[in-house]
Length: 150
Ligand code: ZN
Image (cartoon, rainbow, N blue to C red; front, side, top):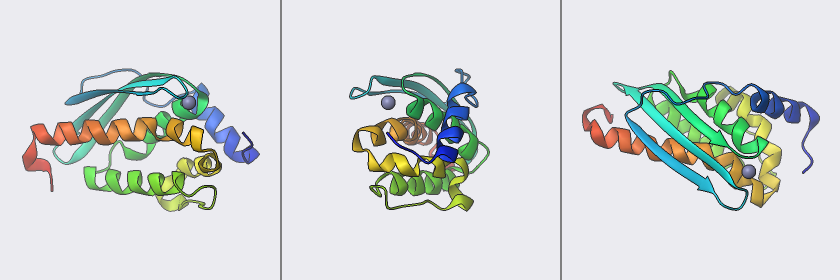
């Protein structure tokens, strides 16, 4: 896989020093696997009203999947669920761009570093693993607290 060297450095930084890793209290927990690559993540979401108070996770797998979970934690913790969903959709769109998208750095920050990954269909699943786990866990957390779903 060939990535822009600056972007590669951002991904490796997150891989070596993952942000927010470890399992803490949450309202919902999911376990997702990417059998193609062997990546696994257990992810918990804690909501405070409509704010994403914490995303905690335990994960193993390739550098792309690990770095992506770290970036997810950076971007979405502290945002509202609605803002987090917009970021998730923007990241999904970038990952489905087949190497054509660049990503809006205002919205995606370090996640734009994954733009080159979208050229490699097998690796897109690695990049999306934690984001899909977050989406799933958030839906479960909201189902427990329907009042905050606004
Ligand atoms: Zn992987």
